[in-house]
Amino acid sequence: MSITDSPTQQYQNYFNIDMEYRYGTNNNQIGKARRGLTMIIVSRFGHTSPMIIQWLYGITRAQSLTHLNGLCREGLLEYALTHRSPDDRVYTLTRAGAMLAEQLTAIPMQFRSTEHVSQRLNLSTLFHDLIVQYLMLRGMSEKYFNNGDSFGGWDAFVTDSEFRKIARKNDVRNVDGVVREPDGTVCALEMEHSFKTPENRKNILLKYSDSLSAGYYQKIMLLSQKLEILKDARRINEQAVDYLTENNRPKSNQPWLSEDAAQQLRSALVYRTKFCDELTERFYR
Image (cartoon, rainbow, N blue to C red):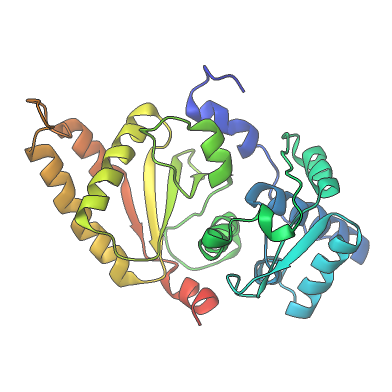
């Protein structure tokens, strides 16, 4: 990727990674498909958990543990015990696993040797990161759900760590991920766990606006486990956008946001309530 490419052009190597789970006709094909996809998932997100593997492949918890522990016996994965995971454990790559993942994705993998497995994980954000991982994989599988609604999911994504390699400017909001919708629209994903103050929202909105103008994404989709959090986010965001258009920057006659930028921002914000109950059921009970 060239640094002169537009952001969406720089996404292409990640968008081109095959994340489709192709269920085989016999146990050998099924095993190979799961082995390859699991390794790609762990390499792109940095980790995974039995709960996500259980859901993704439609298997039991015991089968998900057998699958992941089998990859550990191959020397491709290691696991750490932690209460920050819904399963009390999380799996990550070994050096051999990183080398295999590099072959599978054609993307260079960075591996950092540590004394303990947990030192290769950001445990403080692990619960959040696992929810985001579930959401991004869930959107990829939306075509298999017949819900009768207009949500079409997405057909490719960029993880947060991949996004940070591309968006290295201070004025760009580091989002939880970027997805490509079926019509080609590039959309940022943000998981909202809790209520934010108006001041926090103003700063975030300004970075969203800069990122939209720079072409990093065309929409911002906010998701949460609570409908109330999304309702509050919408209310405060609307008030904050009004404030930013009506008030000038310090020592300037220019508003924080122009009317055009404000309109672009309002149109780009999407408050997706579809997954509230699903996330609560899987992660909060």
